[in-house]
Amino acid sequence: MRYGHLLSVLSECSPQPVSRDKLCEDFGISDRTLWKNIKDLKHDGLKNGFQIKTVRGKGFCLGISNEAEFKGFTQKIAISENRDRIIPMKQRLNSLEFILLLAGDFMTLRELSERLNVSVSTIKDDLKKTESFFRENSLKVSGKPRFGILVEGEEDNKRKAIIGLFRTQLSTLVITPEYEAFTKMIDERALRETLEASLEEHDYAINDLLLKNVIEHVRLLIFRLLRKNYVNEKAGENIPSDDIRVETLVHTIVDYIEEYYDLIVPDFEIIYLRRQMIGKLSYVENKQKSNYIRLIDNALKNVDLIYKTKFRLDNDLQDYLLIHLATLVKRLSTNHQLDNPLIDDIYVKYANVINISMDFTNYINRKFQV
Image (cartoon, one colour):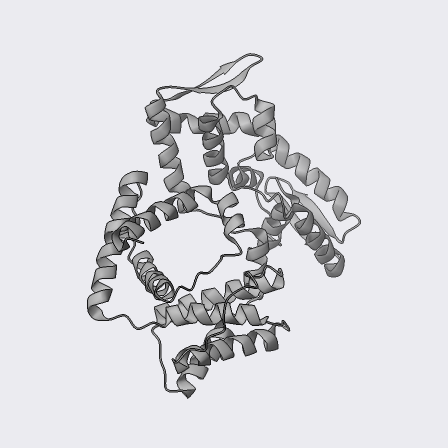
């Protein structure tokens, strides 16, 4: 268990105590592990402005005697735990099932404990909770003294189980701690109002879906600028757009970023931004739009067939894909190639998502013959 997460739970419920059973159940840990963490925090609290009090028959509660010291302590442990965050029990069980299915050989309890950063006793409890999952997939987890744990069963059943887990994880992707912290400092409402006011000043309006897409693009741009994660400086020739909406949006976004976040937007990033906005605000004729919608629907049908997913039923996803497809076709028609500076991070953390994206893109490519 991570101490910061435990303190957060106790702080939210303060001054009411939180029962021992509830903490063990919520975090998926043993009573012994919980008590060890409470004991450590009681010791740390003596020098950091807080106390963990044991309330007989009711559990534990948090008392704060020095707000500044307590805040400093929580910030310190948040930084130290940033790379190794607590994994919710459901996600941890999915990870354990994945590890065992992909191992292909015996794994010891100690190895599993180190991989998931929990105690051996917690791993033992988790293995009991995974029994129903493996049983539903006609598989069995067996143990052998001095060797460890192994999943037994037909390879086809293992593959089906992996696909099932994959579908579950697609809906529960976790953003990185850095980006999560960053999103809390972004005033999305102020950004939206700034963009809307600028467009209204020039008597232009864009639909809400497209505006949300632009806001997300700007948010990622600010995140990259803060990390100095720039696009390729050879972004190409700076060609102003004939569409005043594009130039209005580009200048508004750049001014907003430089004023509110005290950042300098390099010229090559402005070129990249302009090309993105050209695509996003491209006019799509009704006939062409119908063709795109049909193409996206068929591509998602193909992906669902391969990965046993249900992307085709997601109307919001189809709307966003329509925006991106129109953008892509516009760029290809003018030979505007863009590099994604985050692609390496995405591939490392979400390799399966990249594979799905490639299958979707390959289907589109075949239809466009590009």
